Length: 106
Image (cartoon, rainbow, N blue to C red; front, side, top):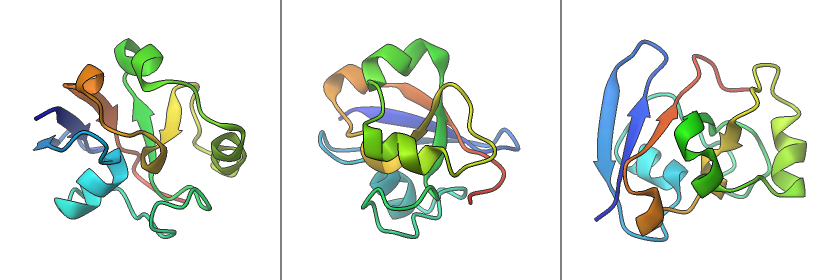
């Protein structure tokens, strides 16, 4: 099973195994990883599952869609490698992906 390393804003790490096809958001919320609010439940209609993808994984994680870009633009803490975790499905190629979780979700 592929794994994801979530790193909280305070440095606490959570390594979670998931099934191919699970979103990073569902892995975080299903395993009680702090820092992902997921207010819309993964519908890409808010930005409360914001995460920062480690630079080494950006190409494999892919680019955000136009809808995701719109939601990310609402976030004042957006970075160049920001994504919505609900929009990143886990794949074998993403085994070991590292994502930082922001201190605040908006």
